[in-house]
Amino acid sequence: MPLADQPLQDFEEIAQALRPKLHRYCARMAGSAVDGEDIVQDALLKAMEAFPRDGSIAHPEAWLFRIAHNTALDFLRRRLRLQAVVAGPAEDDIADPEDEIARRQVAAMGLRPFMKLSPAERSSVILMDVIGYSLNEIGEIMDTTLPAVKAALHRGRTRLKILGESSDGDTALTLTEQEHQRLARYVDRFNARDFDAVRDMLAEDVRLELVGKFARRGKPAVAPYFGNYAGRSDWRFGIGAVDGQPALLWHHPDDADQTPVNFVLLDWEGDKVSRIRDFYYARYTLDIADVHALPDRELPARS
Figure (cartoon, rainbow, N blue to C red):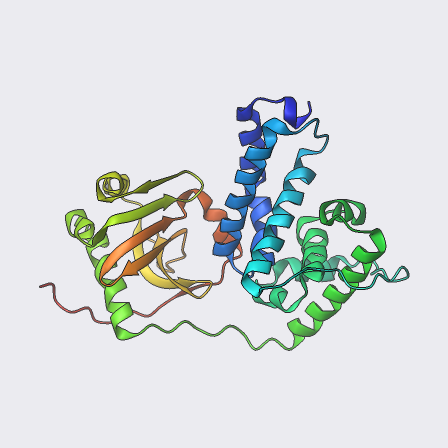
């Protein structure tokens, strides 16, 4: 059944089923699992707005990926202040042979090497080697010719191979003492289940986003969120970094390795939390995010 003839509920089910796959693409385009989720949300909102006005859509997945692709390019243009994104000159006679080992290596790469590629190279490599689309499907999504896709794919694979051989690794996040103490104080109160103290740390107009689920604004609207944690015993938070951003890392209390299963990002205004982004319903972001736990430091006694 064409997507345009399906009820909105069916569209939402399709979108949710494809969301992790869309994220794998958008995160690598943006070079960040967090930014990738922002792009996915923006793309799905655009798709939902376009849905009632569209005619028959024979291939819903390709349609959604094309919207995600264009949304990712818009994101890159804004961030890099590009006037246009072009594929470069087409070369009809360039095509890589099938190389499953190389493709698996590309799919297993972290996010940062992809940022060394041009947007067209990045799109072609991700769609082929990570997502698994054919050359024709990539051309449809990118709205470009088959020779241009082949050329961009060849250049991108070649550059990634060189980058993989010369990678110097990621630079670890460093926090100032004040930044660390601020996060540590929040984690300390949270792990102690002193949610009244946690609420006292919130700004009056604090924003909460349970990513992929709902958003709230203002302390009265956000306060019930903490009850979700109060009723559970399968969590403990530590301080870490996700894609270079300070983060709260959720792990199971009985996990000696403290492997993260979720993360939360906080924005601050002075010593008050102005924004909470909890990725509980978007935990697929951890599959490709650059995650590091930070060493504990002594926390001053509570005043």
